[in-house]
Every structure is written in C-alpha cells, then in structure tokens.
Length: 153
Image 1 (spheres, rainbow, N blue to C red):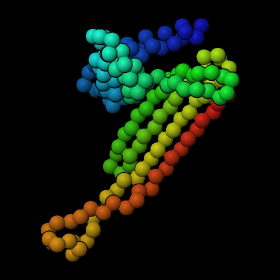
Image 2: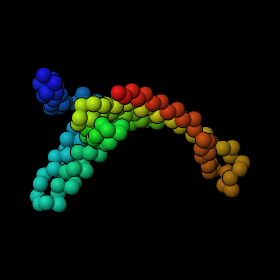
Image 3: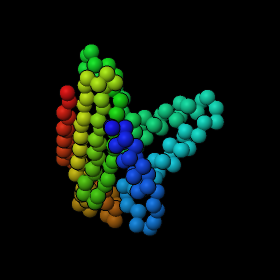
Image 4: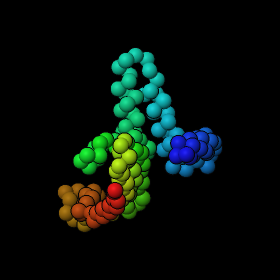
C-alpha cells in the first residue's frame, strides 16, 4: 500500500513539473534544473561515471537521498531531504526538511531546519575616506536566527 502511494505521488509530481511555461516559479525551476543535472550525471558512459551519478543523487538540491546511521541497534536509515534557499533585499533564508527511516523498520527521524540572516549594508560617513567621492560599505554582524524541529522514534 505504501509503495502504491509513493508511485502515485511520483507520477503526479512528474506530470506537474513536466508542464513548462512562462509562469514558472523558483520552485519548479529548482526541480527542472535538478533533473537536468541528475540526467547529465547519471548518463553512464563508463564505470567511473557511477560515482558522479551517486554524488548527484545524494547531494544535489533541492531534493536528494538522505542516508545515515540510526540509534544503536536500529541499523542504517534511508530517506529523502529537501533543501532550499532564497534571498530578499533584507534577509537570507535557507531551510531544509528531511525524513529517514531505518531499514529494520524500528526507528525513524524527521527534521525541519530554518536559518534567517538579516543582511542590511550601511554606508559610512563620507569624511572618513581618502577620496570624498568614494564611500565604504560597513557590514555589521547581522542578527541570525536558527530554528530546528526534530522528532524521532
């Protein structure tokens, strides 16, 4: 039953992202670019290209395979991770969501991570520089907010 749901949503998302048009947003553009990168990396020309394909599948963005060890006696976990970053005039935003389940079925871990960095540049006064027509940019230590939520079994 679970695999049927996964395959169904996979087909629906493929059909959704296959539509192209001028109204493409950043979310669809990220997935389009990722599919292009994974396709290029996973075109198997020789044995050495297997490593490039694995690298793309496990580290590319916005969606990649998440893998790691689980708590003691629970084995190895596999899952998916979504990573994105967007910048505005005043903020640098990055977030990720991942979920990993143990191959033994005994444990799982999911998490959501958000980082916000306020990035505003201030101009110094003109009289400080050697040339009166040139201004330096002063970058103060920006406030940074990190949020983490991570339930597990």
